[in-house]
Figure 1: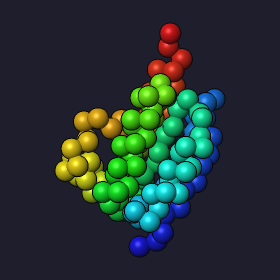
Figure 2 (figure 1 turned 30 degrees about the vertical axis):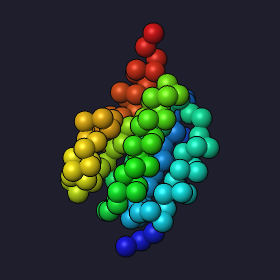
Figure 3 (figure 1 turned 45 degrees about the horizontal axis):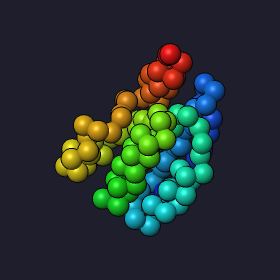
Figure 4 (figure 1 turned 90 degrees about the horizontal axis):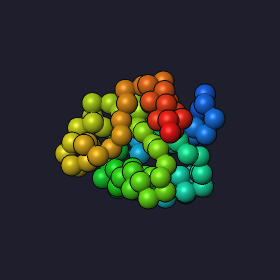
Length: 119
């Protein structure tokens, strides 16, 4: 499998950061991923998993860390494009009900920016 690539781009709306991941997301890449995430201060973070064919338990833990740190810092986040395989991992790992997920990037950005703009 291809090694993980992390691409950071601005979203369509102000304050939105998109991390596009592509390749296998495994323990080997967890520290790079965490470093990138910790360096961000955007109020909305969307992690695009559309091109992640495989994720191990260590990388799932780093995704859960995004969830917990977002709650602590009062930031919004979402995962988008998770394949059936990744969704199964979320269920087996017992985190499918706590992770914020949307089928598409557009749906996530619309929902998260609408919530951000609300009083």
